Image 1: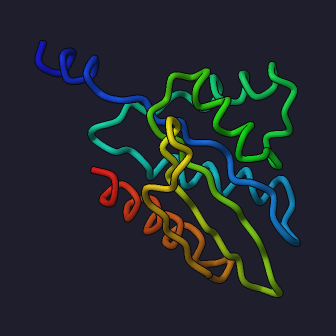
Image 2 (image 1 turned 180 degrees about the vertical axis):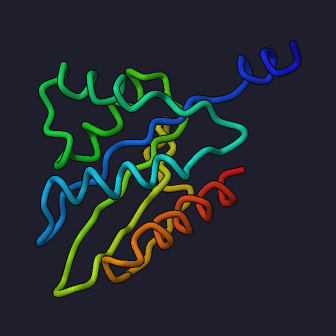
Image 3 (image 1 turned 90 degrees about the vertical axis):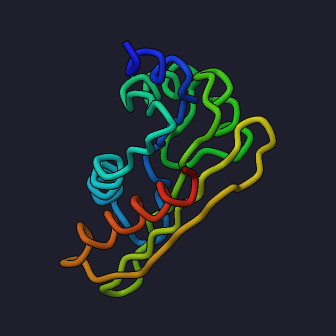
Length: 139
């Protein structure tokens, strides 16, 4: 019963697939976005199912790997999310760079951010660190 009450009180959070940056493929973005989502679970937010997020993006006719900030905020408002988590994945030579922001949907302001550069073989550990660091910043 208490869990149900806490679940009803929790704010909604939308975690979008990362934006396609420089020198990366859609497959790389999908893999790293998935890894991020599996490690991002803040206690005081209900994370909206990614299929629901992607379905809305498709319905609105947006390209999920290259949306403008206004489009991102529109998606967040339609999902009734308090915050959105958005990021960009880039690659330069043999290093990936991930930059992630938590955005307040009502104001459009960034309330937390985290990023890192890492080798391909380190992506699981580094992306997990970024996700957990952001969780601590917004709780």
